[in-house]
Image (cartoon, rainbow, N blue to C red; front, top):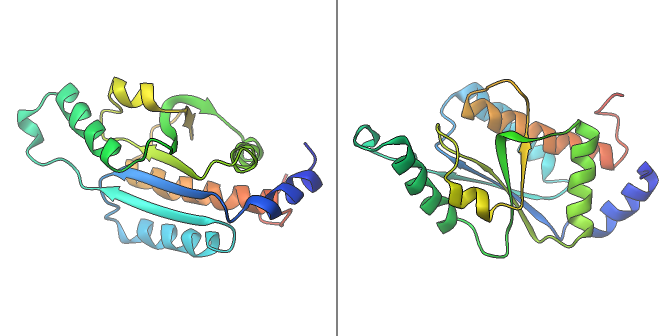
Amino acid sequence: MKIGHLLANIRSFVFIMKITLLSIGKTEESYLKDGIDKYLSRLKHYIKFEVTEIPELKNTKALSEQQQKVKEAELIFKNTATTDHIVLLDENGQELTSVAFAQLLNKKMTASVQNLVFVIGGPYGFDESVYKRANGKVSLSQMTFSHQMVRLFFVEQVYRAFTILKGEPYHHQ
């Protein structure tokens, strides 16, 4: 798909869709919060973007990994609607280039997805019920990053995707 065609589509749909980043736990490091805030302020010129943080579970020493994943799944489902299009940020997800990720966002916009929810799970990943509910999985890298860093990397990639779609000079290829 040519950039000009992408631009025409984005002009028509950019403010209809909302993107939500849903994550288990808070971003505690101030340098990461600053970076996230930087890209969130830039993103408001392109799309409605929301960050929802679900508090980490308490007293997890008494819970098995599976029990933790089940409890986190309950919290994820409480914070999503049945109409949401859910994409898990998962180490086993599809790896995309920045341009391919931009095309994915454009495809969701043109498909009239109203709320595109990207989910970062807890330390042990997702319960099977979350995988069954999800509409897709994306991996940011084969490397492992802290969940707090993933939030920053993801928000930057969403910003990069919109600059690609708009033909702006942020992304170099």
